[in-house]
Image (cartoon, rainbow, N blue to C red; front, side, top):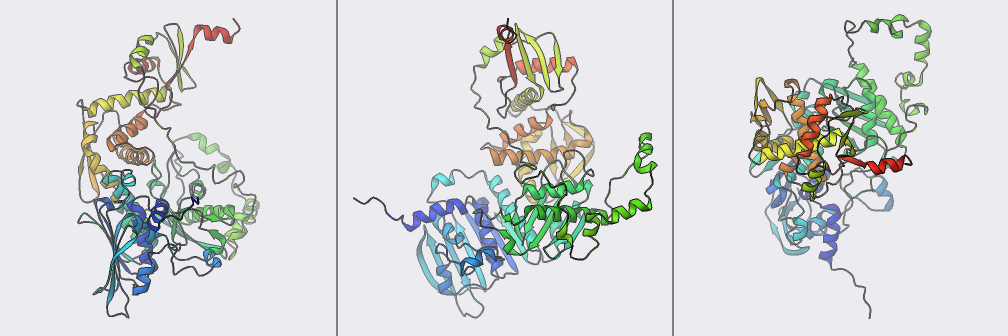
Length: 604
C-alpha cells in the first residue's frame, strides 16, 4: 500500500506559519510591510489583547482587484518575483508570498480592499485557510486587513504566547523598526482603544525623537557618507547618551531592519575610548547598497542577511562613525588638573611637527575622506583582521536554570562557616568547613543570597524605601513604559518608589538604600533591559524575571576586592539560604574538596 500523501492545504499553511508567524508581532511586521509596499502614506495599526484577539492594519495604499485580493492568500503568490534573478534585486519589504497564507492558516482573517479606479471594493473572510465569504462591498481606497483570534485552531501554539505586556512590547518593537525606516509615512498605533503613538510625516531626526524619546533631541550626531559602493546615513547618540544596555541600536539595509553583532561592533569600536566601561551607544543607521551585493534569503524573518564582502561593510560603518564624531567635535574631554602626569605624555611633550602632519595626510584613512568616491578603497591592513561575525560582541547568554529541587537540609547540616577566609584572584573565597576546603564564587554566592532575600520581600517582607531628597525623572520608550507600569507594585516591595508622570515619564521618589543616588536612574534602565533579556530567554513570570535581574545587577562582581568580614558575612548568609549549591541562573556557587582528595592529588 502507498503511504505517502500530500498534506491538506490548511495543515501545510499551519506548518509554514510556524516559520513566519511566531507571535502577534510577526503578523504586525508582515502586514505593515505589505502596506508600505502598496505605496501607503498613512498606516494605522490597531491591536486588542496584545494582538491575541485582533491585529488590524488599515492603509491608504493602492488596494487590490477582486482577483488579486483572492490570490494574495495563496502560498507563494506575490507580485514582486517574476524570475529567479528578481530574488537578488529586491527593494520591496515583502517578497516571498508567504505572509497572508500563513496568517490565514492560523487565524480568522477579514480583508476589505479597493483600488482608486474601482467603484466598489472586495470583502473576503477566511478561516483556517478556507474562504468563508467573498462579496463586493463599499470601501475606502486602500486595504483594511484584520487578523482575529491568532492560533485559535492551534491551541498548543497559543499556549506558548507570553503575557499581554510581553507580547505588546514585541509589537511595539516591530512597529518602531518599521516606523523608523519610513519617516515619510504617517503611522498610528492603538492598543485596547488607547493611542500609544501618533507619528506625523517628518524628518528622520523627528521620527527618532518621537519614538525613542525627547532626551535625544540635542544629543544626536548626523552620519552621512556617500560612495560608489554604498551610502550610509543616520544618527548616533553623543557619548553622554550611552547606556549600560544594548537598547536603542538600529541598523537598516535598504530600509530593512537587520541584526548584526559584527556591524554593531563596528559602531562601538568607532567610539573607541569615548564611552564609559560597559556602556553602549545609541544609533540609527541606514545602509543603502546594490541588492546584488547582499542576500536576504537566509532567514524566514528577513532580519539576517549576508553581505558579499562583510569586512568592507565593517570598514565603511566604522569609518563613517569616526568621521561624524570628529566632524562634530565629539571627542573625550581631558581635565589636566586631575593628574599632573598627563603633562608628561608624549602627545604634549612632542608637538605635532610638519613631518608628522605630512605622514598623517598620506595615510589611507585620511585619503578615504579627502578623495571623492574613494571610501571603498580603505586599506585592508586595518584592525579588521581577526574579527569574524560570530566572535564579536556575542549576546549575553544565561544558563538554563536548574530546577531547585536539592536536598538542601542535608547540605546545610554539613556546611557551616569556617573561621578563616582568603580571597583568590578577587573572585573566589577560600575557606575551610568541617574538614573540607570550599572554593566559593563570590558573585554566584551573592546572586543566590540576593535572590532569596528579594523573593522573601515579594512574599510579605518588603524592603524599606529610602526617600530621595531630589526625586529624579526618567523618560522611557513606549515598550519600556508598559513593562515598568506592570512592575511598579513589585518594585515597591523591593525598595523602589516610582510614580507615573505623563505618558512615558516616571518620577523616582525612593530607592533601596544600597543603590547610590546618582545611580538610581541608570540602575532602573539596566534593570528593565535585564528583565527583557530574561523574558526573552526563559519562560518566567515578570515577577520572577525582576528578582533574577535585580540579583544579577546588584551582586558583588568578580574582580571586586573584599575584606575578611565581608567574605564571612557573605558565606554566612549563603549557608542560611534554602538553596546553596547553585546561583539563580543555574551556575555552581562553590566547589568542595575533601581532605582525602587533596592528599591523593599530592600523592599521599
